[in-house]
Image (tube, rainbow, N blue to C red; front, side, top):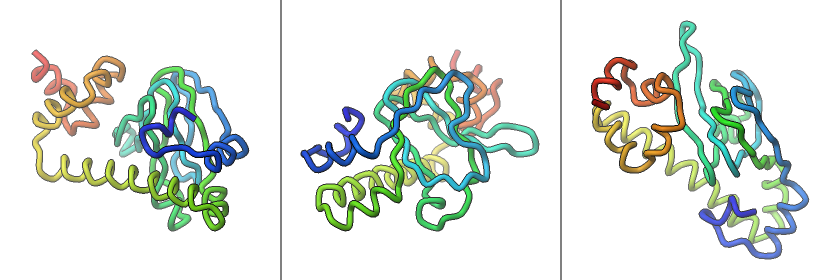
Length: 181
């Protein structure tokens, strides 16, 4: 339950709920947690390792984001609109992921203020991450996005494949190599 420490204080209600509803998955490097077009209403909390979200465009993987320890990921469109996700989730390293069904959170939130607060905190975190990504894509150059990543998440640059980082930043591998010099 340490994976929630950065999101919300956990009381006995939340601890009991999590003990009953969280499943732990161990993923090997390269293993997919979810494929494209999946109707997956789970929220994933990374306990250890590194995941990436991506989609395939004309045979080329386009990285949307990286999720490392204590991070979370879910398809907002699938959670709220029950539409299949357009992206996949893959382990870039051996990873341990805590899985929580959104349906179980919704159901228990109806009777528990603590779990309602958990749900609000999780959704808030997902929205903030999305807003930051949109801002970076609309208002920053690829080079500025690289420097921001160096400042905020330098470990991703060391842990993720160069091609995935370049795709995430919106540049070619060659351009990323030139910037890094």
